Image 1 (cartoon, rainbow, N blue to C red):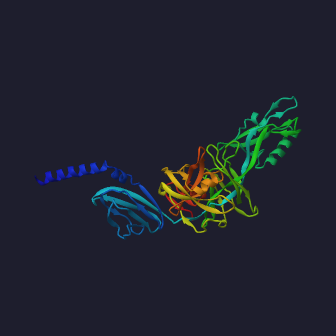
Image 2 (cartoon, rainbow, N blue to C red):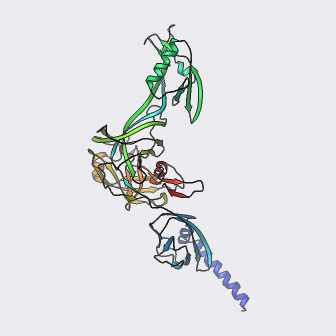
Image 3 (spheres, rainbow, N blue to C red):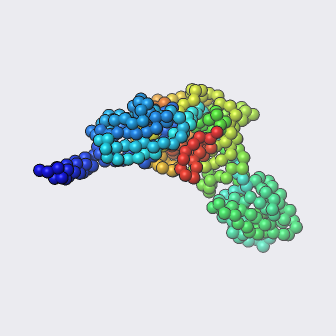
Length: 442
């Protein structure tokens, strides 16, 4: 056999070998290496592919160390754990060659500045005023002829519409609307109503009607300008002076419309009792506001991932006042974890849970994980997840990974959680630019 034939046979054998390992489960796992890796500065990340293949890994040692080596090129056994130690923030590339010869993968590595936050768990009282007045129902007015009608409904206003101006005057309180209605009715002129619906502005003319029963001028609308409730603080970021809480959007109780916040406050709250969850009937924390003069922070945003705003100092009654690292969505794994929450008074306690499912999310989305309460003491006390527990931080391997958001009505021991990454973005702590690069806010 001449050298040309030997090379041809060697090539065929090599292709056959690669095809064989390519169809194997371990290699398919290895082929699932992401195109991009994200790490916080100083973070040690362990990768496990379980493939009996040697490879040469090339990387910038100033940013990353592979298996503790300061060399820019290292031969590794991919059947053994691969550790990446990030040294400084920035972007680099990790190149993988099978058998040290065959280019296989180039992975973009993005190292962002270290980010640590104080985990919450405290029960908080929430008071918010909307950025207008919300239409929550239509009211039938009895006119002088004995007929009933709703001027607001006749004008085309719907449930969930947010009235922001009347005759060019900003309105965010019910009593202001009542005053303008009376003035217009007395002068027998219509009101020019500016409202927001599904994020778009609209205008309509509404003529108040004198109610023969109430002896007052009415718009034929039920409106609301504020909301209050109880939830759980998720985190406090001391370097940025901001917080995140609840893990889900605040909606109006009648229309289920997300409340557009004009202003708001979070206050200290104390749990007085627990109404236990049962199958088909979620329970709730019963709590009252304490030290109302002591405002913990303001409410600036109400998003699908909770409420966010400024907080000037670390909240009291923390489970642990020390900061902890946070995890990216892709680093959360199925397995044991803990939540921090209050079941009595203001004492934050730690309870065991199991993360039973994680969803792969490359962008902000709710329902990132399914969790199950496994702590017998918490199950005996609450029956599982109860209303008011939303926002309770989820801790895994010493990192803040997410927050409790919803309970399964037919199985209150289980529910959903969201990834902490999306809450940090909405808080303005973790920023994402147009090109997809992740960074922390200065």
